[in-house]
Image (tube, rainbow, N blue to C red; front, side, top):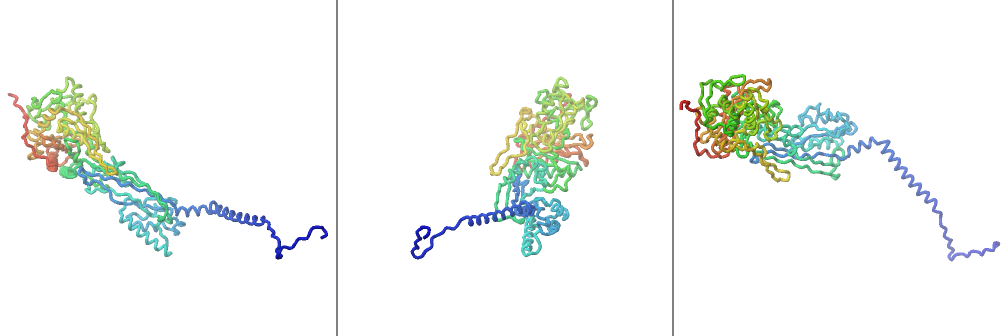
Length: 623
């Protein structure tokens, strides 16, 4: 050619040479596509997070994780033989989510009113009150509509929810009960009605113990609640959704020292006597003299712990430990214990008892006018002479100060002015002033049971101490516990304190027999055929709790049996008897007899084998 380049040879078969295309256009196309996709994502993200944020939050609210409390089962309280005194049955708190009943979510304008109208007859609640709970806080996810409802009530609601669901699925209306749910909250029941109500107390609507042992032992009885979290969509649990659960730990069971049958006998006897006497109230304590365990603690009037709505608030406690009152002559046992233990007199020491005894700013008298009595110390106790008791305790020291301090020390050893050790809610320690604070008259009234105060358990414990050979065993109400794992743990051994010697206690027991057995004694109505009975009457002036002044009387009787081999102590007190007699022997002697007789038979205590000593009550001054 003209250029001098050789001409290309044609390829065999006439094939054209391969030319590679430029990659740039394709890369531009892919980049454009990816940019468009990213732009779509950004626009959508802006729409979700900014433009439609509230709408999507509302939808997420309907489809969410719901926490539900798993209530622990409350432990049972049983008597000493394992018989239920307080137990639990299945019950539910009915709850709702108000935020699911807003017009936007429920797709109806008056969902709270519709829901309230459906639920009111089932729950037995006021329709307007329910509507208010469901509509007051529309953003709330939780409100309690009714507490402690039976499984039958929840089944009715559940069936209604299902029926509304079916209607909604067919396009007929909406399920206004979609947000209604239930929480398991077992209900406390008391199978024996008012039996031992003062001891047991009761549980409030919130499931917490509100009085008695239910309150005192609440933490261990209640156990520890668990938690369950589940996925919800449209007011229903998602079957395949995540489920997290922390199981509840059941409460411990408590076994008491109370004997159900003896408690029933004590409660029946005191309720009858309070009614017959037209009294304000009364109590009976039954204690095992050897162990200090309380077998009965009865109050009248009582109450039904399963339904406290009809009971006067003043009757809801346990008056046997919360009432402080002047004991009267049952307190003379402590004065005699001090006199014998200090060795300043014997049971047969002669005591000349005039009709009046001038001391301090007054002349002291006995319950009845009498000529000069010539009594043994035993007779002073048997006839319950205030004057004789003053004369005996005056021998305790050379000076008034010394005498008062010695008597005070014995009263304290017997547990007066101290907590009983039960730790019971509302318990009183009573009132015992220090000896240096005793007034001129108190130093003479305290020896015969006026000017100091105690509760019924403290009074019973005094007699149990003598019955137990002079050693005080702190009273107890709990025998043992059974934890969630089923392991039984016995209660710690009660505290023991030596108060007087065995010899002194034995002499005092024989002296107390004269009160019941001797014709001149004041406790003849407490005799029990076949058993030797040791006891003491009490009739004291009563301080009116409303006015703070003396008005009326406290009638009481305390004692133990069999006197020669003690097993049970029974103490009875009746406050302000207004019909018939007000003397302790007349009012409480029969109660003591009835309860003691029942208790001895229930525990199969054999009758006394020996006859009592029958210590002389009086002496002939001419001999």
